[in-house]
Length: 286
Image (cartoon, rainbow, N blue to C red; front, side):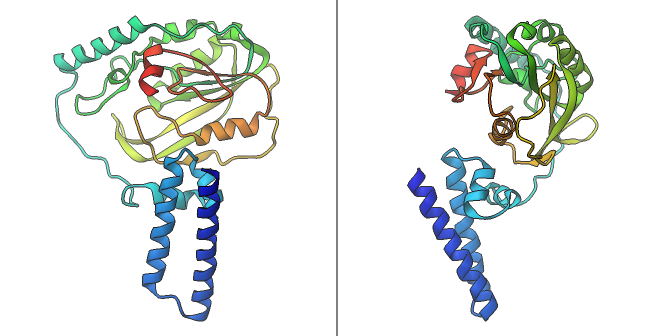
């Protein structure tokens, strides 16, 4: 992998220098430019597929993150939401979602944390209740068991964290107000947020939704170790349901350089992080 990225990066940088020279000298044709862009896009897709984040691929290829985002999209265009008038919450849909919850609950959850953590990254299985999505649109309970707000609040996160700690909490717009009950119950105070612009749209009840919030909250005194300021809006095309971009791990690891790290409701086991959540969800992702 290291050799591939080094060679790919070197090749693309050489090509870009050649193109720039060609433009200056008037020797580069539109067709040559098109082929060069296509080669970069293909290389970007391979780098992302190999596990690099879009930010890492952009740095390697010497272009901006927005360029890589366009390169790895299917057709380079923004998706347009489609309307559908299918019925909502049919009996068959409710039965399927109940079966998913029952099977996942039977598998249980991972062992409760016993260490003290400085950094917590949480993507709770929010229950949207009466705000269920139409049958033509999947929702959380189509993929994993959801939790009522009271049960999320009751998790003993206060016992799992140090006196000085930071919480990164994923929240969607419909649950934003209620999420502050969780922040308070877990012993944190809201500070700021990141916005994940997903590029692709989801159907909402009031608008066409293409973003989520990553709330940044602290307990005691826990400012970033690194004073680097990331853009508060991160435009990264969404992939699988509930799958969060690896770029946000990069942001957290850059801002907070030491301390034990816990990911709650994790979909994957990541090096350097302990995990807590549904066993069935973790096993399905492996």
